[in-house]
Length: 341
Image (cartoon, rainbow, N blue to C red; front, side, top):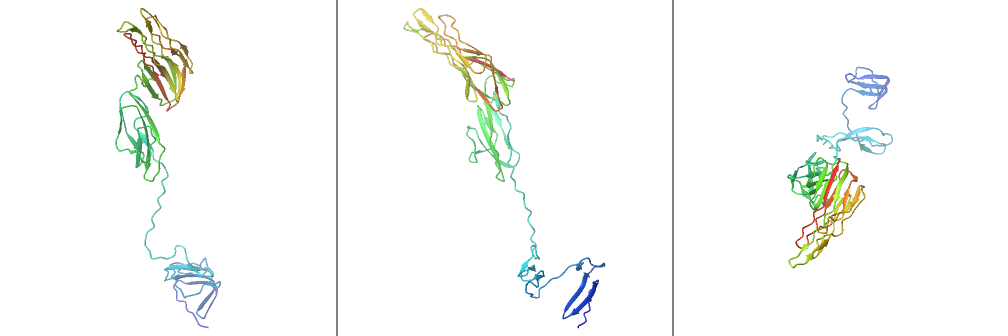
């Protein structure tokens, strides 16, 4: 048996027996290398361990062994059948690991500088987003897509317009399309919550909050009066136009126009007076025929109310007066008065 001399500084043999022979060291206990206290594991090393390889075959007998494969530049372990590289094994590579960037899945939020509403003059609307994004829009009432116009400058709205827009950020997130309705030049529509009109036409108003709308009156147009023609005969006047109120695309109140005056020689009579119908309450009344020289008045609704919600639009039609017969006079246009709170 050969004598084995251990010349490791700081080597502690915390063992009951040490056997040396045939180039092997057998220790019945624990070994500490570079430690100053008794090792707490079978082998405790304070410092680095340099591994190599003797070409040992990996079998069930050597299962659990580790080695350094200089050809593969990796630390390998024996699993009982073959040598396999340890995950995260040794490597001379100094390439830094690139941090993973979190995926952005939050859509952008775009905003219009001017809220929906009624305005007496043209409006200039600026669109912005809360992050770097492309804003697409349309002013034709058609829902925009990524093939639509790209916002690059403030949008000038000289007349009533429905503006639709959305934003798409750099990560490809797309927000839901938004809609803003602008009533430009709506006569006598104001923030006090009222609408009064006595000129023929079609008018709309989109509400920016829930409201109860009261119908003060809705009157159909009067018919035109009759008059003598150049040839000495007479001509009757035309019927007055219908006035109406609609919301949610359904007509809720109608005031029919009056019939034109009809004349024959020196005598004459009114046409048929206008009537009224509604589903919002209030009193309906027929138009009047003041005298035989006048045209019939339109029907009238007074009182009644209805409720609207934010974003809902009401449409009011004011009927046009009936045309004059011969040298008679045109009938008066209808009229309407609404208020809300």
